[in-house]
Amino acid sequence: MKEFDYSLDYKTLDFTNPHIRKLYRIGRGEQGVLLCKPYTEDICKHWRFKDVPTAIKSSNKIYEMFLEYKRQGDFVGMDLARKFLEMGHTRSRRYANHKNGKKYDLSGKIRPQETDWRTSEKAKAAQIFKIKRDLAAKDTHYVKLRREWRAAE
Image (cartoon, rainbow, N blue to C red; front, top):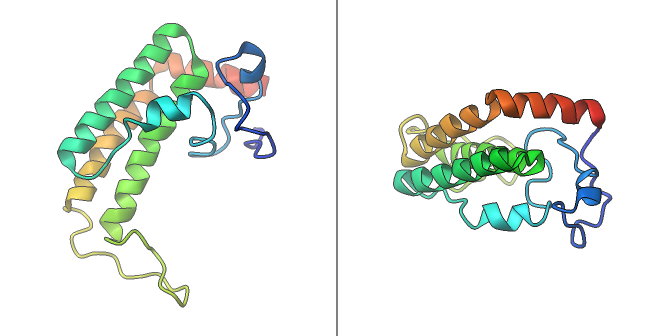
């Protein structure tokens, strides 16, 4: 697996360009999710996790975008939509675990987890994103394209 390439000038790259898209690397986890234009701008404007209704609307829209990228045969778009769904899950979990979003205190020690970390609004939002993320990540066509992309990296 090739690591995500942070040395590229992402401000000038358009990953819908067939020659540029070859530079895309899956990387690990959410790497590159905020860098790959125009996908980042297109998907990010729908990415919200404030509460359950917002998470439902956001995850549904991003999953619809995933399916549209799938219809277009656009693996880069599919992968970035999946990463935004993943990020919705992880960021919601962060705020479920620590209401201020900060895991560490000023001395570098881990802050105690919130008492309602399993049942809070953010915990529920995280679960909503996880369901959609799992649908995307386990999509048979996505899995096939991901395997092919990794082989070509």
